[in-house]
Amino acid sequence: MSDSGSLRGAYTPGRTATAYRKPKKQHFGRAGSATKMAACSISRVMNHLLIQLVAFAWLSESPAWALSNAFDVREASIDSVHNALFTQITTCREIVSAFIARVEEFNPTVNAIISLNPEALSIASKLDERIAAGNVTGSLFCIPVVLKDNYDAVGTNTTGACLDLANSKPLEDAPTVTALRNAGAVILGKANLHEMALEGLTVSSLGGQTVNPYDKTRTPGGSSGGAGAAVASNFAIFGTGTDTVNSLRSPANAGSLFSFRPTRGLISRAGVIPVSFTQDTVGAIARNPKDLAVALTVMASVGFDPNDNVTALVPPEVRGRDYSASLYGGSLTGRRFGFLDGFLNHTASAETTPVNDVMADMVEKLKGAGATVVNITESIYNTVTLAALDVQIYEFREVLDAYLARPRLGGSPRPDSFAELYNSGRFLVIPSQSGMIRSSLVSSTASTAYLDSLRKIQDLTQALDATFVRNNLDALIYPQQKNLVVKIGSPSQSGRNGILAALTGRPVVHVPAGFSPPSEDAPIGVPIGMEILGRPFAEGLLLNMANHIAEKFPVRRMPPFANGTVEARAYESVPVIRPDTGNIPGVYPIGVF
Image (cartoon, rainbow, N blue to C red; front, side, top):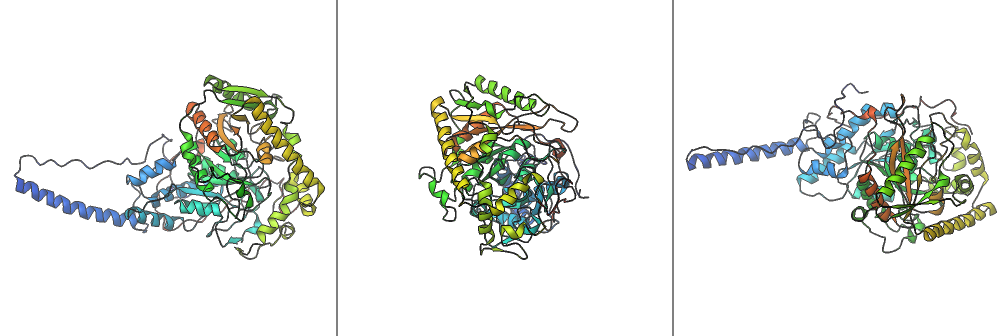
């Protein structure tokens, strides 16, 4: 904890640390017109001088500039940041400084951030200059964003949270990162992940164990758990992530957040450390549906990317879509949801019963809002059976070799291949993943088993489409995880239900659904989330339904440990963040599998 930080009162929505007040109107009494005109002239001169002084103070990068009107960034949104900026309540540099201060104050507790972008403050100052010049464009203007540390972003290393990749330095941005920058976003830093995005515990050799903000005995989900914990703790407006099986939705489930897994092909995956050509997607995690829709719009604006040929699958009418516009209109009345009963664990326990209760309550709420919920009991919707179709072991080595061999990836020393990395002794593979790594070393996409799995995935996709048609469904719903997010030190992140979307490439929007009962470890309970799965390229409809659910049944709450203001700080430069690798549980050894 920094000596310069201090905590104040609990969060009140919509509050800023110092409200903007208009100057009082001048009153001249009965003085003559000459006196009145002289007073006006003096007033104009003084106002002109005041404007000059304000502009100088605003643009100065000296640590002496004051943060007296600091904007309260807790639960801030894109709209609230823009409102504060454009009414001159605050500056971009002050906003970025406020988020950095929260990282300094609270990251030692959750261990979510691997590194901060050393250019973040200078970028913010340049955006302030654009405001002063009246040159403000971009839907993400001055919006602080954290990237999962498997996205290439010039100025930061791309490590996959692996010690052996600590020096890996991209020479160009991932296309999605370029799109975020072009929209005005400030890349604040890189977030921890489950090493190489291979599981859901969010523990790594470079970043240590990330901790759940709501229950410090539990994991934050994963593999995008660092981004999820960061957004839940208000370290940024939103975060990016990747999803090979569960990895965007699992942290949203564990952090009372919204996220999306897009239709396969909608967003380019180029410039992101890969795991599976078939199952990988990229997306975002946010605190509200509107910010999520803006993030999706910007990330999908990349369009067709020759470096990711599945982007050619996107229909012309979908390209360039503004998903923010999809949020409005319509209602839940008349919507038809299919509930996947097989995605529940009906054995009562302290870990499963809270999930079942929250989902039963959500079903009743949807019915009360005028929706129809159809119970789907088809035997194919069984996550154990579906997991057998996972093709990561066949594709991982080949796609990682291709990524590491790219000429636009610099840094030294670093491994040039899958085999070199996993023979370095500088990695973390949890024991339950050891078989997967050993299989990946010898498996390939030329195997008959791989081709058989692809055929079965096609059959599953057709069966899923038939379920939608037969029941006239708008979406399927189910809990993201059958049980509460697991404890730190667990063998794996068991009970998750993301495999159906991962195999079929269908879109999902995740919404907070409730909390478990409070406990000593979880003062307001452990978050529980729900997935809404739709037809191909139905992201707009899913976001619309998610927005209605969020408005009618608000669930999201801040984690209590982070629900305090942090004293404003005037940074001359971006501080260095050092993740805690001393908190890695002993059951996860380094350098062996």
